[in-house]
Image (cartoon, rainbow, N blue to C red; front, side):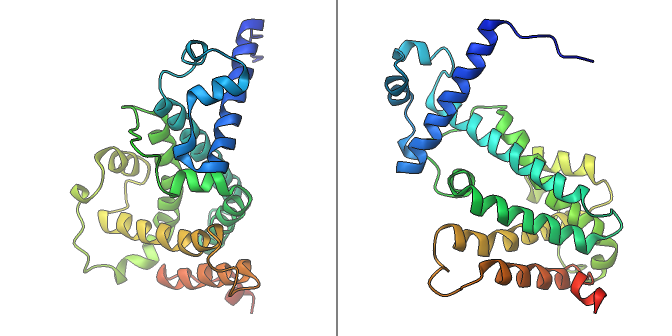
Length: 241
């Protein structure tokens, strides 16, 4: 079904919102999240302060919108990577998602810092923010990788005593609805996998390994292949040997 055409006013509003976000990202690139200012954006765009507040009530609303946009783009990238690998190849899917994440992070360092760097001073996410839903969607993809590997990995993680009370209730609800066979111990393993996928990438984005490593992509791939040992999966390289 064709989408109804938007009115000129709606198109202008959408264009203004895109421009506001662009200015906010530029401010963040220059001074970090704390540099985001609605008044400064209004000044740069030739708007009155009152006019810009008709788009975003507060700076925190704008930041939450940006976070939601970035998490959505990240999740879209994950899902595109998954679509390129058969569902019965859990090791290949781990590799595809991990490398997709690194490519995104290196190509969008400011967006990476918005999600995983220091938060803007005083920032408080509005209740029910779409950013939280987008974050849960991105995290659920990583959890799905562990869910696929769990039949192989579960016998090695029987000593962990996690319960659903160890997790945020909203996140736990999403995971339990999406992956009903994955126990709390499996979710804890997913958080550990998430941490390992982020570790070297964070060092790379913040410039900490550039003086020591000529090929960060090679180092990161080795980390992903080692991660498969944790999940009791056979690495793609090993299968083709």
